[in-house]
Image (cartoon, rainbow, N blue to C red; front, side):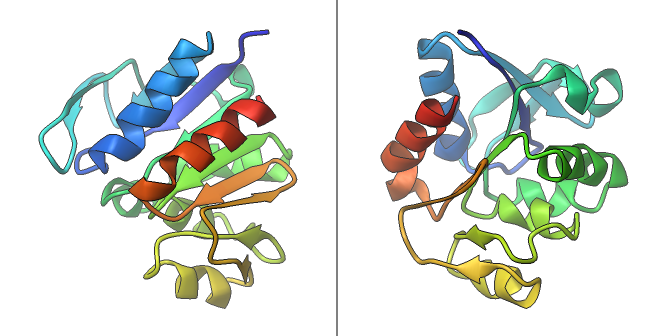
Length: 167
C-alpha cells in the first residue's frame, strides 16, 4: 500500500541524499511531497535543482505517514525555524516513521526528543546526538523502532532498504 512521505529540504541539501532515497520511494510507489520554506526550487550542494511541492505553511504533519530528512547544510538551516522543528517533533512524539541521513538528525536534536534513542549520523553530528542523550552506533543504518538513521552517502543502499521495509 502506497504511503505518503514528507521530505524537508532547503538549499545546500546533499544532492544524492535527497535524489537517491526519493527515487527509491517513488519507484516503490510511495507519494513524496518535498517541503521547504516556500514552493519553487531549491539547489543542492552540487547544483541539483530540486522542485519544492509545498511550503511548510501549506502542510500538516498529520497528512503524512512518514518523514524523511536528508543531510547536507539543509537541516542546520531548517532547525533555526520553529515550524520545521514542530513538524519534525510531531513525527517523533507520535512514533510515526522518521528517517534521516547524515546531518539530518541535527533537526531532530532541536525537538528535544532524541534522548534515549539509538541513532547514527555523520561523524561530526554524532557527538551532538550523544550530548543530547542519544545512544550512538557507528553503523551504516540504525533502526530504533520507527526511527531510521544513516551516516553518509555510501550508506544510502542500506538506508533505502531499511526505509522501504519500514514503509
